[in-house]
Image 1 (cartoon, rainbow, N blue to C red):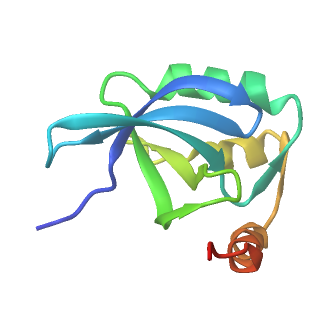
Image 2: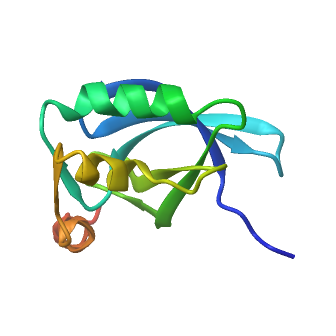
Length: 123
């Protein structure tokens, strides 16, 4: 049995690198809305328009796959991940890099983990 990533729908693009997504949870029959930040890239202001165009083109009819690393969250509580077209396999971050609207940020996940480790634990 092949396991597929969760299916999501983009509700809103809030910033050039931040999206509000609705994650489908079929095992409990519900959907959950979450904010996510694109993993591994640093976006310019021009990214927002390109993200909107890409989502509009690739989201229909089946939604998008949410690709992430163990539901990792950044210091603002946003999921860290990427979106992938179900039909073509193209990812949003790859598209933005191809369009030269974003720069690679390979240390992004390490920065997220460091900020989580530095955070004070409640007493």
